[in-house]
Length: 325
Image 1 (cartoon, one colour):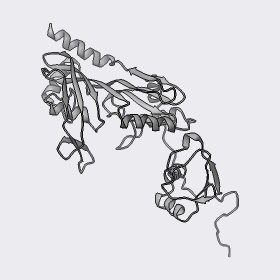
Image 2 (image 1 turned 45 degrees about the vertical axis):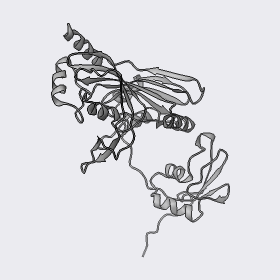
Image 3 (image 1 turned 90 degrees about the horizontal axis):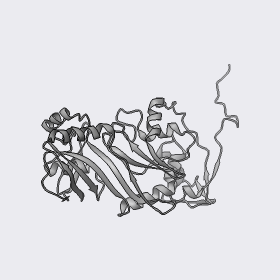
Image 4 (image 1 turned 30 degrees about the vertical axis):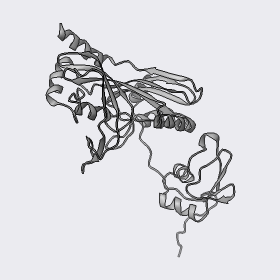
């Protein structure tokens, strides 16, 4: 009688891996490094092999919080990983649309004028977000990570790092005051407050449905937004908005709190206003990340990048201007 035994030939057994850490990989924790390298392996197993000393750095045991240095050699023990299903590919038209939206690119940074309606990452029923589409268009790129985020319906400037060192530098600038974010927004109603600083704290809730809702609440985090009018019409006001903090839905909630919600906002907006502005051709949220000022992580030179409004939003402003005559 024959018995079936698993094939344990050397060709099929996982082998010890020795990985040399490059400068771009330095600074990350060993546990996060392993989670990236061992995709498909449960985190509980990764922490177990760390605790047991099966992972070594420079032949020595390390703790999960150890931060890798350039030149380190990491020993990864034999570990079998589950085969992952084939990843679906974004439509070619979507890839081409995103590539056409790139405003700047060098060896470490991509600046994109994100179209409205494109989420920055997949999830919640979306197969592809901007970062998945970008990775699909550059399958050999070793590193592509979002520096920050924009709401799905918000258009405009978005930074993507091609190097870990660039990501770290830009995150440090974002945490401090090294990045200035300027938006263009159309707000409902006639703005008569001039230059206005809004400092209401924002508190984030997640509903049972999974939807995120942000409210002005004293329990919330500090938030600071500056509103400055550019053109005021009968039905709405075209504004420059500067963010000094980066809270979820900050501009939309602060604008509504000030009594002038963002035009086209289905979550925090005024439905009567949204309906009226459709007569001027508005079909989406009128919120656009217009300008970014920061220091380039590689050259250390100041960057000042502008993404003009698209034709559809420009046409809405033209229609409002014509209605004034």
